[in-house]
Image 1 (cartoon, rainbow, N blue to C red):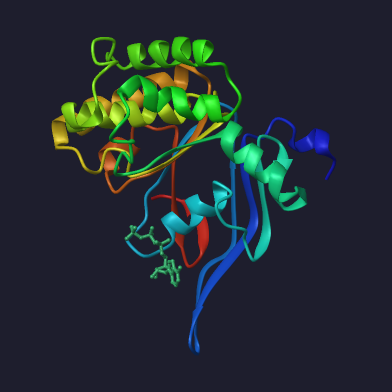
Image 2 (cartoon, helix red, strand yellow):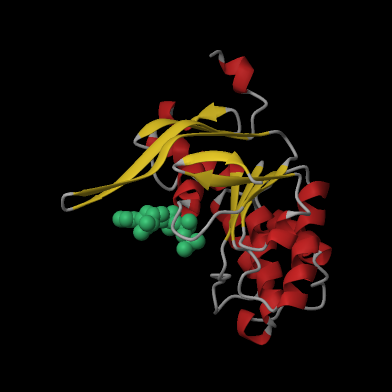
Length: 232
Ligand SMILES: Nc1ncnc2c1ncn2[C@@H]1O[C@H](COP(=O)(O)OP(=O)(O)OP(=O)(O)O)[C@@H](O)[C@H]1O
């Protein structure tokens, strides 16, 4: 396949297989999984516990290499890249949101959004402008100088989402992004996440057990016997 063909693909998994071996046991979690996101498309991944959602997100996020098949991120086949280039793509083209916010406790909300930008080479001044703009999109303009411990759970998760978007990724990967929040807060934060992801034109793959939230996305897929199939 020519590089032109995949140039506009934010994320694709092609015939991805992955197993875990412990002792004599081999657990085939993925057996030729295929998934392609269109630019700006938000896809929900809803599947029972233990079927491989986290494994899939790890592979899509270039945190691990698949044993078979390929992962394309921002139009680049990650299997063809040097470790240095993979790291650069992971840092600049992918944003991650986890169930727990993983914010740095000794840094303010703003600093938590500034830091990944500075690591990517953005000046402190520009990073602050971007951080304030993003935190403002989540209604946190009056919380910029708060430490995470002084924020509510919903606010902490909003900061984590803003941090994930800081480097203008093309792809957002999220694993139960509102799973630690109460039902009402989860719904609100989720709606904000969807709004901002759409405004920024990102493609997103969001694992959730919440079928109601999944129903607000463009498409729902599930994992069945190691394959990615439409959810029904
Ligand atoms: N590093 C590992 N070594 C061995 N087995 C693993 C490893 N990581 C995951 N597994 C196994 O692979 C399967 C899929 O795990 P994974 O965490 O991807 O599932 P999941 O769908 O995300 O589950 P949950 O919804 O409970 O988080 C599970 O049976 C798990 O025990």
